[in-house]
Image 1 (cartoon, one colour):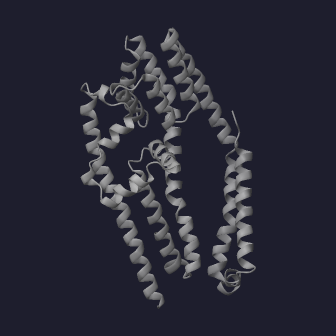
Image 2 (tube, helix red, strand yellow; image 1 turned 90 degrees about the horizontal axis):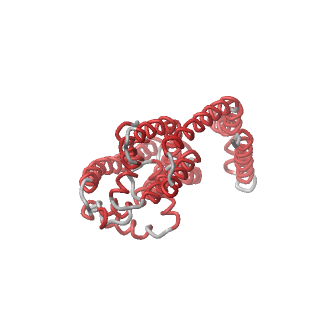
Image 3 (tube, helix red, strand yellow; image 1 turned 30 degrees about the horizontal axis):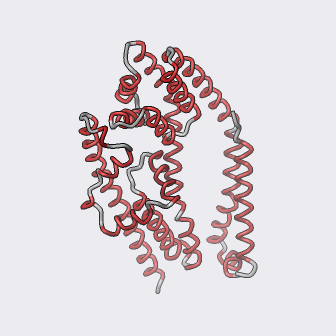
Length: 331
């Protein structure tokens, strides 16, 4: 097979992968609009006593006709797996409207796509393509982790303003549930969506304590844990919740200010860690193309070259982890 044919084959494979990913995203976005409309109808009626868990509600709204037989079987096969439960939580934290089977399929598609690109377009070697495919398995997880981090940081930064709105609503005579409903209507994303889910869960019949615990699972924040504890204690023993939340809001603002100062002071160390970690990899790729005869010996020598590259990758990963541990300060 000539070089042109290899490039055409690799490009066709990459195009097929992109079409599959875009198709999944399009189907999920259309389906989510219907879910939200139907959830709104349920929230405005008295069906809450018939439904015990919010997760069951969302799964019941998925029509079996909209899923292929393969997708249904894959979903049922993965339903009781431990990693599937973890994936479900991670997708909820990232607010990605994907089922576990679709997330699993994205892993396979990403691995196949990077394998084809690594083999036919970049390296021209099936072994290097296999290594690229293994790396491609991490791409969906990295994307989900990035979305989780972004939403959690936004939520934590918005939490003081959220508590101020909560305090004002309580002092205006609203109940706790009405205050959270006002937050869901007046706050920006992702706070609005998360508190709207809490309100809907309570309207479906889930106890307030469990609904707040679900919120904490989706948004694992120490500040939010403090708020949930205060609300639960106030509901059990009484007290002025507005004053408690106002004091917590002041504490959280000071914590956010401290976090920002620490992040600025450690930014140089974090950037240095990334540069030191990525520099050997970038230099290796540059030399592979700048001097193929020099680097090809290491790639082709399985007895010496491959163990050296494996040891080098392990040392790079260990060094990166140590640097990140050094610059991460607990507060």
